[in-house]
Length: 330
Image (tube, rainbow, N blue to C red; front, side, top):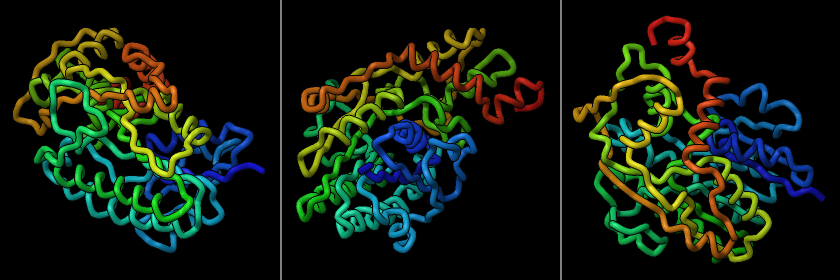
């Protein structure tokens, strides 16, 4: 009998990549939810998942989405870019806390077999060495105070319910994920998506980067994250897992910009705008736990990930790129 899996937030970036991979497996029956963004037509075609529209801040919608499911992949979230994190940090707190509290309780009450929750790394402080899962000290940087503590609460909620019943919970502290289906608009995108859009839509031979470019990020290609999800579906036995998931190396924004420019083949000069919102924070993840316990390691290098994402971007141009290629104002 096929296991029934629901991917919450299946029309979003990470959720869509997970849903596409799992829906191609003959041993799984995959469903997906969406709220404001309808699923792409290509994703809704066989062998794509069966879709449910749901507002996951409403208990009745959570119940509908989870009815009869064996596995829940929780990829639904309110997400935006650094501008909102700096100027409107509350956007990442209330709805995310509400929806996940309802989801995790419903999974416990329905005795779902397994839950995979995508957390993040905003609870970590900067340090000169790669951070382990035990390196969380409670000293969250002010910019990440709201989202960081929200994620910690939700991880602890997973652990709480894992202690009460048979459901296995895995919380993944993933680094900056990038790749196909990412957000590439400048209002909502993270550093990778925003940089690629700026490179591909620059019109006067210059590219303006927010901040001074010295902050560094641990970047992970999305297919590597999906690989781990599949391993967890087969191999997780402990009631609760908390796992760092990243490339175990960091790259500065300045270097990332230079690499994307080189891969694009464009001739661009770079300027740095220190007046714009930015998050001066550097982090590298220690991924020893997930490597030793699940034999997982990223397979896609940054160079290869840039190449793949650039190829996908050119085949599926966002509105800004399409306008630039057409010669209109971006």
